[in-house]
Image (cartoon, rainbow, N blue to C red; front, side):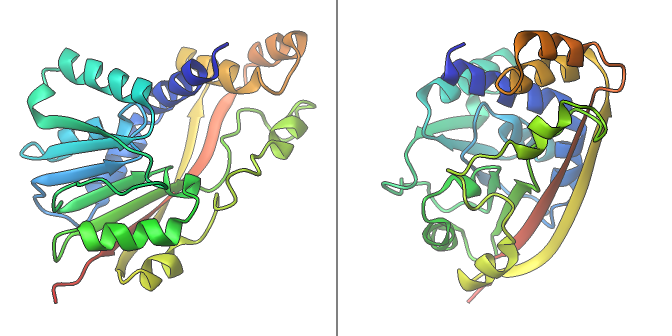
Length: 241
């Protein structure tokens, strides 16, 4: 399978399966009525569309390095009649910081750990935000799991991690403070979603990288297949000077 398509499918499936959890995180944000929002590392738009639903007066600038992801996002915006409330910016944030205006809210979900120098990116966000603006950093505590710990194949999940993303699982609180933010809140959301057609599709796309075809089909027939993960969100304010 094409890796880019594979990644886009994972992002779309994750958005579908954990939509309620994403909505609960946007509800929790200590932000009344932002008008300009930036979705940093937007992927295929899970955060963008959750934020548009949560803040009906807002415009979202969606930023990603992937042209394909941004095209998917624009297609979804068109389908939902939201084209006028979304703009996209293609940028490699490790290379050059784009002009993103002066947003009231910056949302960075599962994107900060991919940055080569996240401390520099946090300082850039701090400089970009409007005074009093908010940065929301959402990160997975680890890779999502689908199998119970006593399943023979679960050892493949436990050993599956990507050494190219050394900042995965970091405590972003001290990093945010060092970049000049005041951390106003931190919350961990536990995700446990029972077997469903979407969970099965998600498990197939993720586990096909780890298991041989026979083992994969055996695992997908289990009635205790479920999605389990934890997401932590930090809400960090840029103080008014």
